[in-house]
Image (cartoon, rainbow, N blue to C red; front, side, top):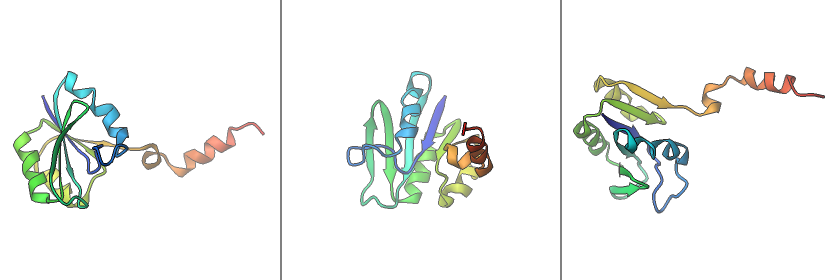
Length: 122
C-alpha cells in the first residue's frame, strides 16, 4: 500500500526539529507500507528532494508541483499534518481516505482543562 504524508515542515538538515512529532510516527511506516512525505512550504526558495531517516521527502513552494507529486504517487490514503487551505479542495478531489494528525490542544476542549484543575488536591 502507498501512503502519502503531507507535511509542510518535515525535518531536514536546515530544520532538524521541524514536525518531529510527525516524523516519530512516520519513520516506522516503511516497515509496513510504501511511504513518502510531500510538503507545500511557501518559504522555500528551491525544491528539495531528500531521504530523512529512511523516509523519502519532497518539499516545494510550488502548489502545482506538490499536487503533481501526490497525483503521481497514487496513494491509497493521504495523511495530513496541518491542513493548508490551499490544498483542501485538492485533497477532497482525490477521493482518497484522509487521515489528519491532531495535537492535544486542537482536540481537547478548554473545559477538559478545567476538569484537570478541579481534580488536583488542594
